[in-house]
Image 1 (cartoon, protein in one colour):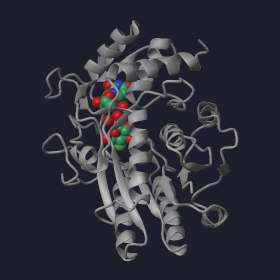
Image 2 (image 1 turned 180 degrees about the vertical axis):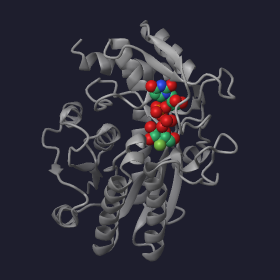
Image 3 (image 1 turned 60 degrees about the horizontal axis):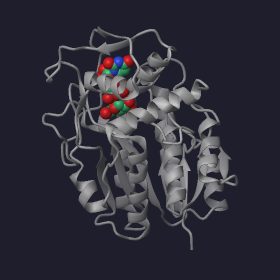
Length: 342
Ligand code: UFG
């Protein structure tokens, strides 16, 4: 029988790509979202890509416990992937309570409900932000976590602990996987779904594509005096489709009972560091477009260099990032052009 995966925040950037990959891998998916930080574009795109016009969508807020309970009563959920959360680092500094309230309560409602129904498989979308500024790179799952640099980052660390403690208290009935994402970029090759930032983008790649298309005048490169080969920060940029596929591997591992511990953690990255400057150069080259940029002062809170050691995900889950940076940057540009109606 087909297994059903609930994807909270399933209409967002990562959630929509994960939904596509789950459906293509043969899962039934229930998408739940309150559209607080996205519109219907990606949900409609998912239906088009998968041909699933009947894809179930529940418009709800995960902070509403009753709504979460009703959802788990209506559908038989074999696994839940929890994305529904606020994610802007800067905003979280200005509005910490909004972040703690939303990101913690929504996740606790999922866990409480999973516990009440006698258990479930829970996948939490964590972040490399939990490693802070690491003492050595690349980082493995055993690299010590550092105190979070923002309330947003803190919600990731806290949710990791909440899941671990809940798993421990449920004697094997409730299982968890924490996926720590590095820097997801790009878009689906169909150009029907991709990143849709509201207002001025915080992240690098949407800023690059918006500058290239003429929506933004100039890209600020935040600092070229870091102790890195070219002076700009280094990151592990991972293709969004590769990242989405990691979720299919993780969900299957949980559902098929292949986990080695009741709560597991995996880095989801490529293992390949790329600097901000290298990324901008690669974007220009592969797409044959110019990005107007200038060197600007450092951005507060930025980590100098971080990239993953993805060995554990490669060997334990059998997942590996496969897409080249060229493919990824082509897809990011195709998506921006699609949005511009070209
Ligand atoms: N950058 C620029 N100009 C821009 C935007 C970004 O130079 O306009 C630089 C940043 O200074 C940084 C790099 O590009 O060096 C990547 O910045 P992003 O904002 O794209 O990504 P971050 O690495 O800062 O943050 C990402 C996620 C966070 C997550 C963090 C943890 O966006 O949600 O990784 O690793 F917490």
